[in-house]
Length: 297
Image 1 (cartoon, rainbow, N blue to C red):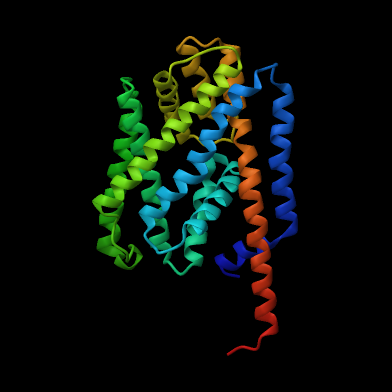
Image 2: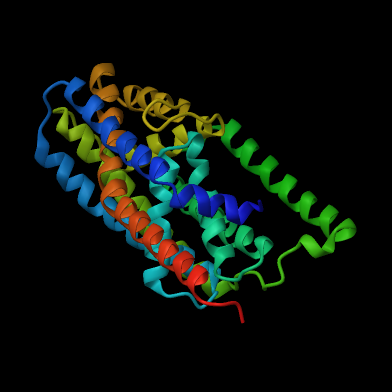
């Protein structure tokens, strides 16, 4: 059985679908009651713009960088699906794998699909760095060294592949300056919504933080993202707690704010990504039935 057939079987499996939904519901149900009393309105005010940023601006950024002629609706749905699967996997790895799989299913080569997702990740990182720099906070030296090392490794990999296995390289052109500029603007908008969500969860604990400090704390915590972990209990989340505490937020309030941020992410992921996955599964089912009924050409 090929890779695409295996992925199709997993997505079409009722056991996987029900299990994923159960986990998605269980995480906030278990986490939120254990959190001390907090104010609801700041959370909601922070969550709304973040949902727009995550599920509208990010898919549009991905579409700009892909340039495959797929509709906005397709990108919105595929991105929402990937976010739910990302929350179910350590390091959010399932999100990238799913986006590559969905693009490959439309006819793009595997290399072009990987290039699309990789370019989206790269521009997202540029947006984060730009905002942290604008906030006047110096990124940790280790983070800059890691970013430089990853970039050098990527360039070296491309050179080696081009020399020995040129067939593995993408056939589509790289995103042009105009595409990169549009994607960067969308990425900057998304970074604003991240700061808004963090400010909302901190305010829900009765504390306050400046927008720039919130974004700087989030950016500084990304270095720990190199070590994968489950959403809400990863090294990145622990680093964010430390960063908030360093900015004057009490330790218990910082831990609650980060737990709230992680738990709230499940709500739109389940509502948008879960529904889209159900619809995608039904579409696969109809295609399978049609292929079984109709004679081969």
